[in-house]
Amino acid sequence: MSLPEIQITSRAVDRIVSGHPWIYRSDIREADAIEPGSVVRLVDRRRRFWGQALYSSQSQLALRLLTREDREFDRAFLAERILEAAHYRSRIAQGAQAYRVVSSEGDLLPSLIIDRYGDCFVIQTLSQGTERLKSIVIEILQEHFSPRMMVERNDVAVRSVEGLPEQKGVLAGGGECKVRIEENGIQFEFDLLEGQKTGGFLDQRENRAAAREYARGKMLDCFCYQGGFALTMAARCESVLGIDSSREALEGARRNQALNEIRQVDWREANCFDFLKSADHDGLRFDTIVLDPPAFARHKSNQEAALRAYKELNLRALKILNPDGFLITCSCSFHVSEADLLEVIASAALDAHRTVSVVERRTQSRDHPILITVPETHYLKCLILRAL
Ligand code: SAH
Picture (cartoon, rainbow, N blue to C red):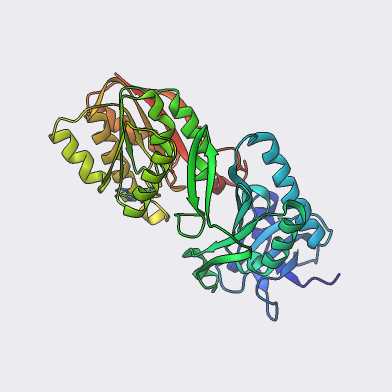
């Protein structure tokens, strides 16, 4: 019952009071002899208790708040949090076979991601703190969900900021790493070890279903990965063209297409910027276009360049969209807000001489919770637009 203590500055206290879980190294007074990744008690100069946090000895983000409760954050507490998160999914992700069970800060478990793909779990422990809790997380998942297999996808660059190695592999159980999942009535195969992210882009699940409502005519899916939007929307379209620069992604897309016996879809390996440019030149026209690019602004310093890239993509898409067509346009860059994106698209619409209305303003699926006091948890924007 004797967790190590760290003294924090009044600025850190203010941050906690404002509902934000991150405390930077410059706001801690002393952390000598504290083991990397420990759960620590936070106290102010007068030793008043403010909460418990995960401590990182390497990152500038030195403390991630777990709770303001003065009850030791032990195995039982962790299990409660995970089960609470899972219970919420049982209400909002009903019928989904693949979804995010624990979404880091969004579930008050900063730097822990747990995705479920059918009877398998994929885990990311992105700080020293959750890395240290990994074996307990595995036990808790085993105890409550008896998964067939658990995989770690810690092959992500952010781990280096924590002094942790990039690694991936099977943590428990075994069998086939390619898992077949039905999403919105379509079969997808996810490769939990080799796919991008944890296998798939679960945050777009609800947007794929929403976008389907507007699909018609000739459809273009830019940045299609393994055909998420393309295959979900294909039944309503005459023809679909999916574009991605990754050959492996398109191999997956073709497998998924075959699984669903969908005929009217073609795939092309290309850079979407180049494709869109030549498409206009070649006179190609579409009735429904999806733009779901990777994050262009991972850092604030990239914001300007990212805005230019979004402008270019949306402008080119509007130029090849038929009158009364629908554009489903996304951004997963936290540093580009919805307001920024709308502004860029307004400017693209003017340049393209199109009248554009906003039909739906959407965000990440509900299994990726957005905390009102933690803006960083709101990263995905998905606008459904109609262009005259
Ligand atoms: N829409 C997908 C997810 C897209 S993720 C879904 O619903 O599942 C972004 C995709 O963009 C990745 O598959 C990546 O390979 C691809 N990509 C990244 N840069 C690209 C570029 N310049 N041109 C084409 N594809 C690109």
